Length: 157
Image (cartoon, rainbow, N blue to C red; front, side):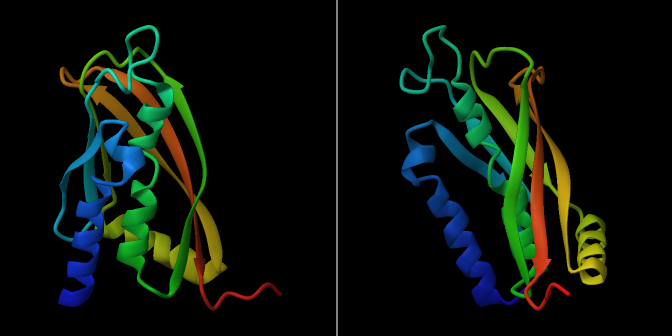
């Protein structure tokens, strides 16, 4: 990845922390890999993202996980591919009562395999697991994210 493209994505990722839906939900990107293959997010429980039961809104728990596999693939695959979030499911295991974290990562090998499948088929939906955990490492929510990837030059026959 060239320096200007890397700088552009670094600026975009840092600005997400000030994106109003994330800012006001208490969600923050706290770490990411220099090659954008890994992200770690945090949701701090505050008065403005707490539900009537005193726990994190389910929507906030989902939001902290929403775009990151899509971001990784958009950046890693480059401009020859279209990448969209297609679907998600979430299983709330226990209430989020404090600060929680989620991590998203795809290895170079995984990205190469995704590219290989899409280059052969033209398009495909890939499913990625994700977990939200509290500071003690206890599972709060388990997610599955479906991400659609298509070559820009793909034409239906």
